[in-house]
Image (cartoon, rainbow, N blue to C red):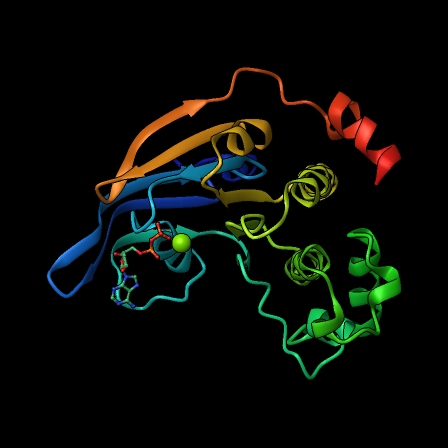
Length: 234
Ligand code: ADP
Ligand code: MG
């Protein structure tokens, strides 16, 4: 018979617990018995070749895929930001961020989230007038305003130029430090994975083929010499 755990110990349960996750398209198993755990507040990067199943895994974790096999438990709310910001063009930026938000003051919350990502003055703009970096900030605000326990980022910076990407790294680290969601960041960029994440996973043949902890201390964004120099220039 299982011993009853004191209440406090439930906090040590992983946020994400995946066992034997399989996703077939036709007779091809893109995810093939994948195991994964993510703890509350962890920053995890997921690498893998194009077509290795990274987005498929994120869709499953976001609850957007009903055709998965295996066990998947996420004990908290989930929000996703994609490579393309996917803003609704006929709604203003703040309305995009507030979309579907089930709180008494969605507009206020959206404005606060936009201020946090540095977009306060673009709250009333139309999405098509935003730069790529601004649209990605709006997409981050839309995810964060939901106060997710798990933030899924699917190559959010790939389409941005190098300088914008560096400022986005700083922003994501600041947001993570302030709110402490668990983050699963899909990226092609090994340096980005090592800079941001505490643990790096590689998706291979439908499973986590490699995994390592990042032992180099991550620069706090405000201490990073390159970023500090950039802050004064951008
Ligand atoms: P990644 O994000 O790692 O580049 P994806 O998860 O998008 O890879 O896709 C993994 C594989 O699954 C690819 O070969 C892709 O063509 C296939 N795939 C993804 N979605 C579908 C779908 N809805 N129908 C058929 N095949 C799909
Ligand atoms: Mg993908």
